[in-house]
Image 1: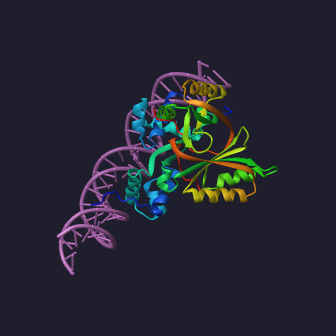
Image 2: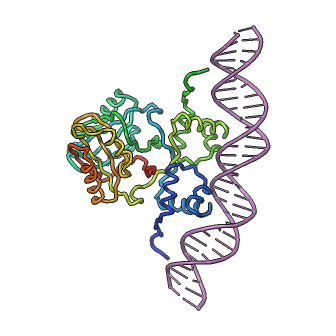
Image 3: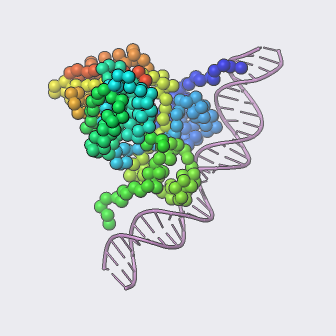
Length: 157
Length: 157
DNA sequence: GCTTATAGCCAAAAATTTTATTGTAATATG
DNA sequence: CATATTACAATAAAATTTTTGGCTATAAGC
């Protein structure tokens, strides 16, 4: 028996990931033709990539502007002395405006990316954040335009 | 005749988007059951959402760490006086490490997010960036851990 | 007001795709 | 050397997607 699962990825797996990244609805036969494998084998590989967590999920990439969330902003956060960091993280995970939250090096402790309807909504979000009592200080930077956008998807409910 | 296409989205469309965000492989019948529509109608709505650009693509969400890209960093950029901004944007679009690039308000002009294999790769990326001659100054912040991650997918080639 | 066009929906048929089953060959394990 | 295990593939079965045609309600044109 083996203690940990065999998790070696090869070039075919990488190619499959490339293809699915571009269009996750390609058929197994299509992908198979591109990587010289039968549909069954491609299916097995995709299942394995899912089981191993390499592919986290099949999803859609949405245009946030078309979903009435055209404004992206980055918020630097310095947590207040003795703030409940776990609670802050839970807040970030649950608030639907927060599309990213990173614990970072440097002068600030966290960096949030938020996606909102307009500046009024951004202001309300910042007010909520301040009222929540986690912050010592914060600084907000607005994205005027986006040259390279990450995929966007609505948060799970 | 109408000059622009009818592009009104209703609650059913939003619900479909929610469902597909969570799992883009749900069947039309499944989704139909959830929104009280026939599979055909769901299909027609998804087609329309694609045609209207609300759904940009069907894709997969990958774990960058499992793809050997465990390090995320943010790079603030101040462009050099008279730098070719279009060329800089083209660079950001084409470089495979750059997962986000935003033109931003505040003291810096651009914010990049990069996803790399390790600190050595980050250093090489920053060297490339400096050699490219766009920059006046830059500042790099590393993500120690990520609480809320955006979907990640490999860049088109 | 009447006719015509359009949008949204649905059922059913047709086409395609996915999934499950089974078998084989190659590789690794004890 | 015998035995698992892994990767692959062909086939059949099941499920899904796509297409077709038709229906109704609303909007637009005359």
